[in-house]
Every structure is written in structure tokens, then in C-alpha cells.
Length: 393
Ligand code: AOF
Ligand code: ZN
Image (cartoon, rainbow, N blue to C red; front, side):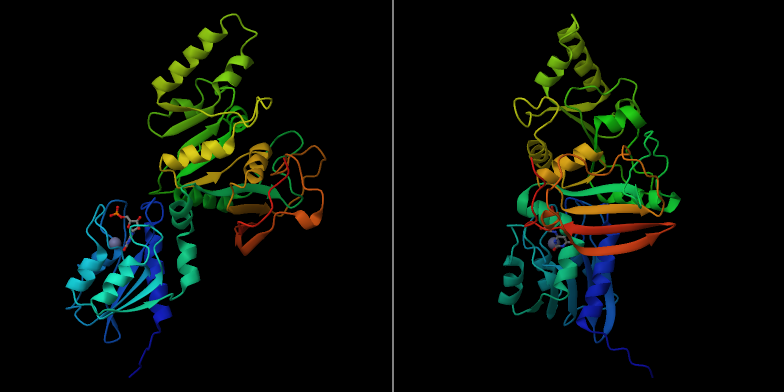
């Protein structure tokens, strides 16, 4: 008879795979999967399926194929010990008389933060910590970043040619990458809670910025529009009642921009009234500096978005917005889709503009790089570490 002995790492990998089922459905909660093993057999498995619903451990333990007394439980995140939207997972683990719990990584929610493990140990449950810890931290990079800083985890996404252009000299950009890569972007839009673009993208492309993946969730659309130029009739404005939409602007800059017209104040008031009636949330954000009339204080905006519960942002900016976000150290991950073609032209736009670094040694470097081929294109992704230098002012 074939014996299949699995290691704790194998079971933790199963838990991680289950956890990923919650992608796009559980935020701002973490993605968690749980596997219950008795006498070398998996007797239950479950995950946190949707925000506000049961946690992974409870889902698994409520559906055991046999009595879980004396079983081992594998979970990628420390079991919670607080009453939130659901009762504590530690309670059901003790109630079901689980003997040993393998934990991937600690929960940084201050209500838990090690206390979940302590409670289990105090009640005689053996706990093994740190199984596939790195992978377990990585799967919930958004959760940990947001929980620890209250700032949205931000991924900058762009598509460029092999010679580093996001459009031709004429501005034509349809399409840089092929169908598969563009479909992949739809999965990213499902994964992140918000999507951010600059007003120029709205003016040039009149995009929807929604998620067209089957069964996917639309991200909250966030448009950086200092002078409030977003057109009535644009797709974003006209669909704001169905898809949450935030326009970040600055009232003073918007007023000054219109000061040539006699009816400026009236027109601005009417515009804000129209947008709000359509369902757009207007956020009046301070300027980066007194003389930078076209630049919002992005950090302030991100703090505000964090306070609104937006835990993650997919930044689909043009070169200027991307550079500003990097300069403010607001970007944690980059997804660069690279099409193996060349368009040339010194005037053709590139993904990050603004002011560049002066010496190659000062470049912003990415770590934990992954490269995948997506149809005819490539996706390169990596993290920007906290210690990396910012772009210059
Ligand atoms: C677990 N297992 O599957 C998840 C945990 O509002 P609630 O009740 O859903 O609680 C959310 C918090 O619980 C969240 O911030 C995180 O600390 C923990 N999530 N814990 O034991 C799970 N999703
Ligand atoms: Zn829990």
C-alpha cells in the first residue's frame, strides 16, 4: 500500500491555497485557509470566504468528516481571540479539543497579536509557530501593511514596450500589451480595493476603470483631479451611482483655474453639485505646496483613503502621478507588463516621469522579483522595500 506522509509545510501550502479563494472578497480582512488533519488524513478544510462571515477555522471545524478531538489544525494566520463580526476562533478550537495547532504567522491586529496563541497554550494546546512564515506574510501583504500603518498598500501597474514607452509619440496606446495581459489586469482590479488614475487619463481615454473579470468586484475609483476638470458625461461620472467613485480635488486650485470666467464661482458650485448628485464623493485635499497649484498632497490623500477603509490601491497612473506617488514613498509593489516590441521616439511617454535620480546607484530597487509570461507579453512584479530611497522633489 502506498503511504503518503505529508509534512507540516505541505498542509500549510494547502491552507494557503484555500486562503487565496478569499481574494477580492474578504478585504480589509486577511485571506485565511485552514486544514484539519487526524491520523494523517485531512478531515476538514475551509477558508474565510467573505468579509463579515465565519473565519477559516470555524468554517473548517463546523464541517468535519469525523470527530476532530485530538486532531491537528493548520492555519496560515494566528487564530483570533476576540469577538468581532464572529466569535473567537480560539473558542471553537478549544471546544473541539484540537490537540496541536500549526500557525503560519502572527496576526498584527492589536486585538490578537500573540494573544490567540497564548490562550491556546494556556489551555494545553501545543502550538507550532512560523510554518512557511514568509509565504504566509506574503499572501496577506495588503492586510499586514494596512493593519500596521493604516495606509493603503499600493501597487503601481503599467504596460510598456521593450523600449520603455507607454504610448507612441502620437499618444496612441491601444494596445501596448495583448489580450491575455489585459485580462490579467482585470484580476488585479479584483484584488485591490481601490483603483487610482489621474485626470489626464480620464480626459484622454474616458475609461470605466471597473473590473470586467467574471465574478469580480469593482474597485472604488479614485481620480486625482486638482482643478476639478472631470467632464460631465464622462463614463466615470455617469456610472458613479453604481460604482463607488472618489474625486480628489483642491477647491482653491479649482477656483483659480476658473478665475478668467465671470461666472467662475457659480460654475464651480454647479459642477460640484452635479457631481455629488451623480454619486461622486468629492475630497478637498490640500496642495503639496502653496505654489504647486496642480499637485495634491498625495500623502494626505492616502491617509484620508486609509481612514475610509480603503486598504489597497492599484495605481494606474500616467508618468506624472506615478512619479509623485514614488516620490512620496507611497508605492509598495510594481507590476510592469512588458510587450516585446519597440516604438522609439524621444517624445513617447514612459511610465514614470517627474524628476529622475542623478546617479544609477540611487535607483529605487525592487526585491522579491517574479517574472511570468502572460500570452505574448511578460509581467514583472516586485516589492519596493521600506528602506529604498524616494525620487527627488
Ligand atoms: C482568524 N481566521 O479566517 C480571519 C481572521 O470582524 P471579524 O470578526 O471578521 O474579525 C476580523 C479580524 O480577525 C481581522 O482583523 C484579523 O485580525 C482576524 N482575521 N482570523 O483567526 C480568519 N479572517
Ligand atoms: Zn478568527
